[in-house]
Length: 79
Image 1 (tube, helix red, strand yellow):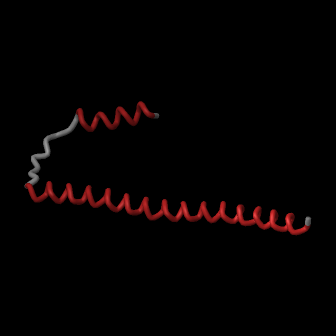
Image 2 (cartoon, helix red, strand yellow):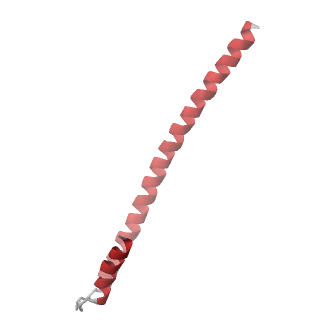
Image 3 (cartoon, helix red, strand yellow):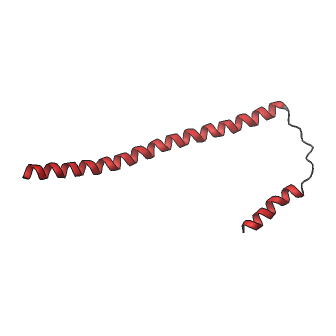
């Protein structure tokens, strides 16, 4: 399967035709700006969801610690 994908992908470069296209400096700057914007959006989304995940996991372990502390308090009071 991987071999077939490689052959198809490489055939695009072997059998390509000239495009006769022109990119002016403004187009290049726009492309760079779009790429940088995508990286910034991805970084902020990762940071946002990482914080949510970290808070969720800390709440789970905090609940477990609270329950174990309550059991210890109950055991100490009964003695």
